Amino acid sequence: MESNNHESELLKQRIQKLLSENSSLSEEVRTGQENLRLSTAQASKLGNELNEFRKRLGATTQES
Image 1 (spheres, one colour):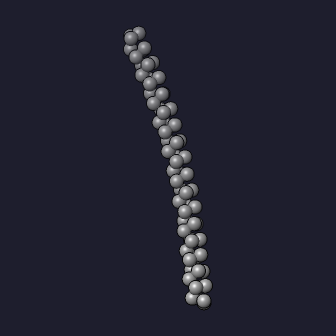
Image 2 (cartoon, rainbow, N blue to C red):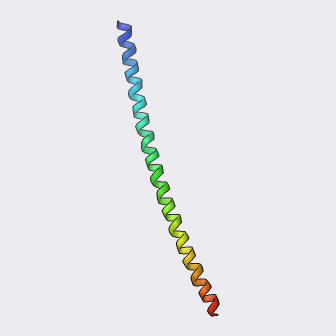
Image 3 (cartoon, rainbow, N blue to C red):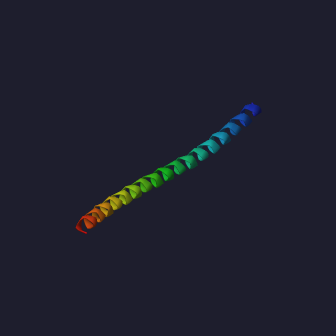
């Protein structure tokens, strides 16, 4: 009986540790997803700015 209680306690501790690790990993994934979203938005914005610059450069070149 004592052995079962000890094993049960060890399993509970192991489960708690795994749950804690899982929570930490979930937070890392959320942070990574947010960073990726921000990077994608920034890349899109820069692409739009580059296209606008190309249009203005083309218009300026045609005027010359």
